[in-house]
Image (cartoon, rainbow, N blue to C red; front, side, top):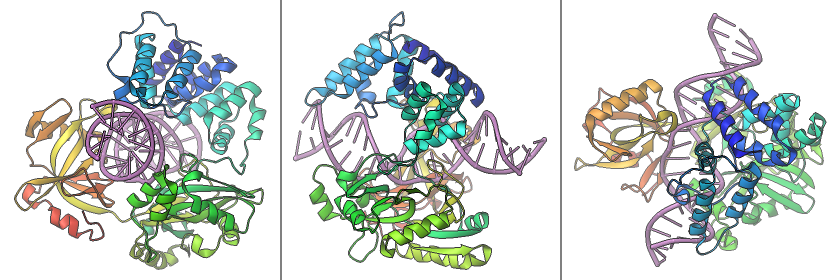
Amino acid sequence: MLLARLAQVSREVAATSARSRKTALLAELFREAQAADVPVVIPYLAGRLPQGRLGVGWKVLGRPVAPAAEPSLTVREVDARLTALGEVSGPGSQAERTRLVGELMGAATQEEQRFLLGLLTGEVRQGALDAVAVEGLAGATGAPPADVRRAVMLAGSLQTVAQALLTEGPPALERFRLTVGRPVLPMLAHSASSVAEAVGKLGVCAVEEKLDGIRVQVHRDGGTVRLYTRTLDDITGRLPEVTAAALELRGERFVLDGEVIAFDADGRPRSFQETAGRVGSRVDVATAAEAVPVSPVFFDALSVDGRDLLDLPFAERHAELARLVPEPMRVRRTVVSGPGGLPAAEEFLAETLARGHEGVVVKDLGAPYSAGRRGASWLKVKPVHTLDLVVLAAEWGHGRRTGRLSNLHLGARREDGSYAMLGKTFKGLTDALLAWQTERLRELAVSDDGHVVTVRPELVVEIAYDGLQRSTRYPAGVTLRFARVVRYREDKRPQDADTVETVLAAHPEVRP
DNA sequence: TTCCGACAGTGGGGTCGCAAT
DNA sequence: ATTGCGACCCCACTATCGGAA
C-alpha cells in the first residue's frame, strides 16, 4: 500500500467531525490493507509509530525539504526506513538521523510530508486515535466493537489484536485473555471535587489513600517477576526491591495493581520529584536504590493463582488482595456505606492529608476492573489551592488554538513591585474566554516575537493548582503543579495579587 | 429530547540519559 | 563539564459526538 493512500485517508478523517464517518473511513482502509501492511497501517492510522521512540523531534526534523511531485513510497518502505533510523546511535547519530529524515521527506509528496510530520511529532490531529481505530477495526472485520476493545485492553496493544483479527477473523479474539506476564492497560479514575460528591455518586464504597508515586503493575509467575508502568513500559530492572517484595508474598502466580513510592525514615512520603527521579534512573540502579529506596503499595488484584478476577466486584478482588498481601503493603482504606458514612470518609481524607499524601480515591465496591478505561467507579479527590496571579505574557496557540493567545505566563508580586514568574497554564479556558483574553492581552501587549506576546502586568487571574514543587527554571525556586485558570479577576488590581511570600508561606513543606 | 460517558486535543514541569558543544 | 534534546513520568480541563435515559 502506498503512503499516499494513508495520507489521503488521514486528511479525510481530519476533515469530518462525525465520529461514525471517521470510523467508516478507517474501516475501508483496513479492509484494503494486505496482511503484510497491517502491522504498519494500523498504528499509523491510530497516530502511532510501531517502533515507539525513534529519537526524532523538532530539532532532528530540521528544515523543510522540497516535496516529491509523484507519490512513490510504500508504507512498508517507510516503516523499514524508520526502523533503520531508530537504530542509529553513538557519536554523529543526530546528524545521521537528520540526514535520513531529510532523505525520507524528499521522497514524499506534500500531503505525505504533512502526514509523516504529524506521525513523527505525535500530533496527527485527525480526531481519531486508538479508540476510533478500534471501532474501524471492528467495522472492517465484523467483530463486535466491545470485544475488540476488550482484547486490545488485555493485549495492551492495538497492533497485536489487529494483526490477529485481520488474518484470522473474529474467532482470534478468544486468544486475548489476561495472562500473567503480559501487562494490561490499567484502570483510571475520574475526579470529584469533594468526598461528599464522590460518596454521593457511588453509595457503598471504599475510600483509599492516594499516594503520589508511580503506578505499577506487578506480575509474578513462580520465581519470575515483571513490573510495568501505566503505559506498560517494563521497569523491572530499575526496581529490584519491588521484585524482592513480590517474591516474599505468599502467592506463586498473580497480577497486582499498585503504586511505588519512596518513604523517609519516619514513614512519611518523599516528594513526587524524588520518587520519580528514582524510578527514572536506569544506569546505576544500585546506587539510586540505596539513596532512594521505594516500596510497593497495592490496591487491587487482577489475577491470583490462575484465576482472572477482572470481572469480579471490587469487594471480592480486594478480599483476594488482602489474603495475599500483608496490611503494610496495602493502601490504607475505610469502607463507607452511603451518605451516613460521610463524616468517616471526610475524617479519613483529613488523616490521609495529615500523613502527607495526595488525597483519596473513592471506589465503587461493586464495580469490575475496567482495564484501560477511565471508569466512573473510581473517583479521586484532592485538595485544590487557588491564587490570584498577574498575567505577564501569553504564547500563541497551536492546532485548534491557532490565532489565539493560549498559554499564560503567571507571576506573583515581589515586595519591590516586580513579578516572579511561577509557571504557565493553558488549562481551564473555554473558547469564549480564549477569544476574550486574546483581545484583552493584545491591548496590553508591549512586544510580540511571533511566539510570546509580552504584556503590561495589569490583568489578574485566579489560578487553581495542586501544590508547589521545586524548580530550577523559575526565579522563586518553585513552580505551581497543574496550574489551571478558574476565572479572570477584573475586579482586582495587580497590587491585590498574591505575593511570592504568601505563596511560599502557604506551602511550608516545600522550600526553594 | 435531553443528558452524560468517552475521546481527542492542548499543552504544563521535572528528571533521566545520551549526544553535541 | 555543561547544555540541548527526546522520552516518559505525573496531570487538568474543554469540546464534541453519539448512545443511553
